[in-house]
Length: 304
Ligand SMILES: Cc1cc2nc3c(=O)[nH]c(=O)nc-3n(C[C@H](O)[C@H](O)[C@H](O)COP(=O)(O)O)c2cc1C
Image 1 (spheres, helix red, strand yellow):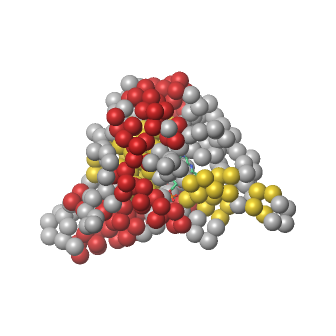
Image 2: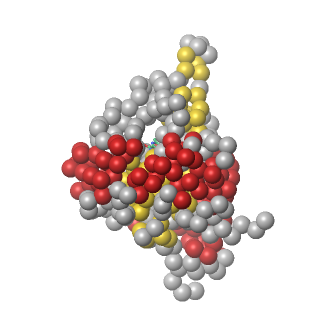
Image 3: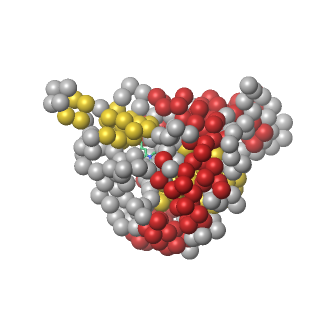
């Protein structure tokens, strides 16, 4: 068999591997130096950045279940300017691409972040986070197709780099929201962000998390995220970054068969920082066994 291709494209951006580290689970990359094989990772996604630094939510901010994690970090980050000055120079040295995750509380904040970052070398594309569950908002942007359309349309004008829109699974029709982002000019859809969740200590009668509730991720959510990725991939023409509970090569192949172009590894990084390398090995052996030369030919191959 000739050379195997694992390359995938998100807008104009080509990745050497379909594995992407999920926002908030891989720091700014530098923290994982020496622990992770960056060559196995097509792109890292940074922790979500906001215009000003944020301290995040009160502790405790993590609650573990048998098969997952509830987190309520609340977008702790150093802000865009510190990122550009202190973090980006190190990211530029990593042998992988970088999607910068951007969050905000108004259209103007998102726009200003993107405008500042767009000029920077080492920023290969953006993932705009319209789906953080930990901010005590009445409604997430991506819980409304109209709001998603409007914000994406405005942000599309701020950059010509790859623009991925990250949406919440917490809606009646996730495909409707994804289609709105596509119509507004997004280059791709990332899903899922975490599911709203909570845990209660029955002795103190208090919530375990300082923020009362948080977002659920990890193995437990995989069947739910897989379904939503399949639904979205069947409804849009732009690439889908699928994720939520991925831990193994088999999980990745399921998401690609469901229509994902690339996949994100999140909670697994917290347990096994070098998960991507192991998973990539498993993907390669599956492709060899199935005599598949190009991973792209697997995409959407689900037989129903
Ligand atoms: C500790 C933690 C922090 C996270 N922070 C962010 C974040 O800043 N921005 C974001 O878009 N998603 C964030 N997420 C969500 C992940 O990127 C991912 O979408 C989600 O965890 C589902 O994937 P997983 O089950 O593979 O972890 C965070 C998740 C965890 C567990």
